[in-house]
Amino acid sequence: MRFLDTDRWNEIWQTIARNKKRSIMTALGVFWGIFMLVVMLGAGQGLERISRAAAGGIAINTLMVQPVQTSIPYKGMPSNRWWMLDNDDLEAVRKLDEVTYVAANLWGGMQYCSYNEHKGEYNMMGFTPDFQHINPQKILKGRFINEIDILQKRKVCIIGEQVWKDLFASDERVIGKVLLMNGTYFTVIGVVRRQSNFVSFGEGEQTVGIPASLMQQMFGMGKRIHMMTVAGRDEVSSSQLEEAVKKVVFARHIISPDDKKAAWTMSVADFVNKMKGLFNGIALLTWVVGLGTLLAGIVGVSNIMLVLVKERTQEIGIRRAIGASPRSIIAQILSESFALTLTAGIFGLSAGVWVLSVADSIPGLKPDGIDVPIQIGFSTGVIALAILVAGSLLAGIIPAVRALSIKAVDAIREE
Image (tube, rainbow, N blue to C red; front, side, top):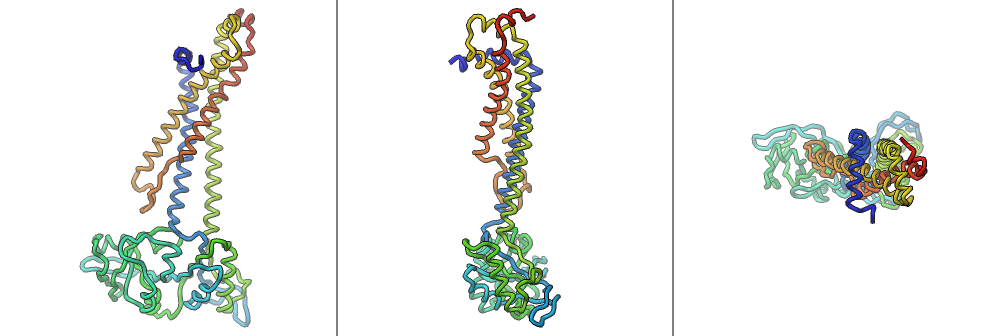
């Protein structure tokens, strides 16, 4: 095929080379358009992957409930009344058909901890075993708190990765060693790495977790808990889960079912849906801006091809006069725009992928413990190449039509 002949491609590059400055400036427009599209898409997709990884393995249909002041008087109880969740609330919620797991979260504040000569202040938290089912933390060593720890109020603890590094110098034999915290000795049963930013294992990795029942005893809290974390069944909506949990809890504490301010709640499913909407909006904006920039480059290619057609009016006219078919004229113009656009576009695509690869290797750019690529997906790359091919052909349509409109007699008279 003439379109694929080596001689034909040499002729194309000679034509582009005769207008070197104009061709380079036009190619830069296409290069910049596809480069910006790839970089923005890669950054957007990378941010979305990081956000998903930050959620860890948390159950999507998760609800967090924390007591606040009531705002409505109810059955003789005044408004502005403080109330607290307790262990009995956990058992009542656990019996609901809408619920799969329910866990207690307690905060003990910053506590002085030591092991031999190593010392530091770390955040103390109390957990029940179901927390690991709702929001699994990565177990680096040992195990998580279990039911026997809760029932027997064992003086055991799980420590964050940073505590392990600070106090135990990342000792591989840390399990079974004894840590002194708040004047009490605790046996280390596990080392964990935070997996989620929703219901996390404390602040970063600087947390010591103990059985919730033990913390209640140590601080004289009775049965009180600070927050309840509930995982609902997949077929139950977040609103249904919240309604069911509030109904049983509010009834136990004589709180009006219409009181919207009596408890702070956060639904992970609602948060995830909002994040999806945000990332969809970012992706749409990225495509609009990127394609707009790319379109500007394609228009530039079309303009330079129009100029080339005008400069070669006599050549095209002579070809028409000696019997060149319209198809060969169109192929000539389209092949030139195709070569210019596709070449610049491939360089732009390659440069964009390279920049994303460099960004992906920069230390500290991604949160600790999260290793996801900041790069465009394969399908996105295919779409970008398809846009390039379509754009290269689009850039040559108007010049090709202009070339076909040239009459052989008028072209030969052209000075």
